[in-house]
Length: 444
Image (cartoon, rainbow, N blue to C red; front, side, top):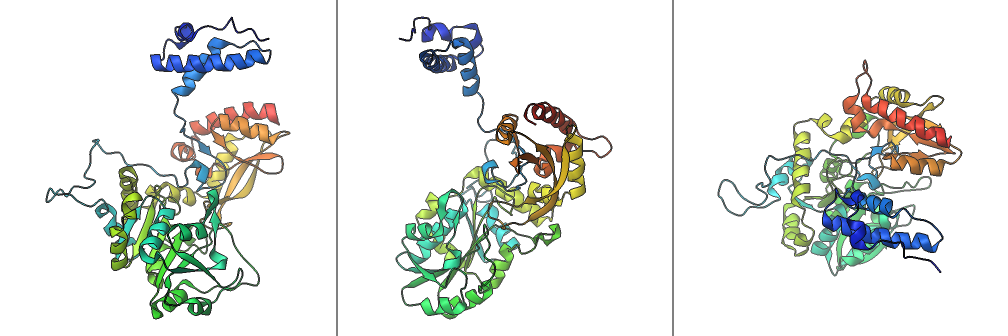
């Protein structure tokens, strides 16, 4: 029978010197947790360090769980790391004119801060921003086609991360999904043949997180847009990636942009703000003025309204696009780094005996299947790569495992970018080298 008599009371443990630096509430919570953990250890035959457990728990309770990370994964828009890196603007005051017209002094519209920018940058008649891309699709379908049929190609009936399935969104909007075409081949005629008096919209989804090759056929965006217009049906394009500029400047082909979608004739185009736009989480909706007005009037628009911090950040990023200052946007800085520079970074942080190999730094987050930029990675072979990766995560270093080795591509690390000088190196890289050398020695 376990003997718990040696365990202190919560009051006694909370008064121990180890917990003295912490507020009373934290001392009590940490003591309760430590005593519970100690009882478990005693039951298993152990001899717990009760004060050590309490101190560790107090530290955990007062440390933010959101922490800065070195993204060496080789994925730029890493969903687990928050997708697009961006620098939130800092105002000099806690208040700002979110919904106040400074000219008239009357209640304003928060959309005013980004509407003109989005219309200018995409060529659309009007714009609306919500809290994420999926919310944008849900709002558009609900406001435009609820109770009606929505046509979607079988080849675009996508599932993305987190088990988000487009058919589920269509059903949640109160619409009836009608599949057209086949998995590998869909023609304009498939859409036209399916149109009837109950058709509310044609939904066109860019299958950006996978690619079908071989015996395939798919109509272009403008072909479907023309067919929809000829038949009086609303054409909604879930463009997804939110790109505002051509990515061929980085050697990346086939990235569809928001201006291209608008020019092709989509009535509504929907995208995420935290992918290739390089901003915060947001749902961008641009298109026809009458349809945007309909979305704004729908009660769901209030439910999915964008918050003030995201709106502030989005405006900041869009202003950089307006001024043609792509280098001020972290996503574009990362993409524009020469591969040779990344190689030098790898060599500077490489422990003795490590290899540096060429690799592809992928876009990620469903922004283009298999697309990315040439890069380099530090390769550290390990007898237990899973254990090595876990230890690196404790050091806030996120890499990837390939063939019994940890691959670390530093292209995405802004701390290195800002500290690196070719003639002087980088203190950040020096610190990383020391950490990697010590850790690898235990796991290689």
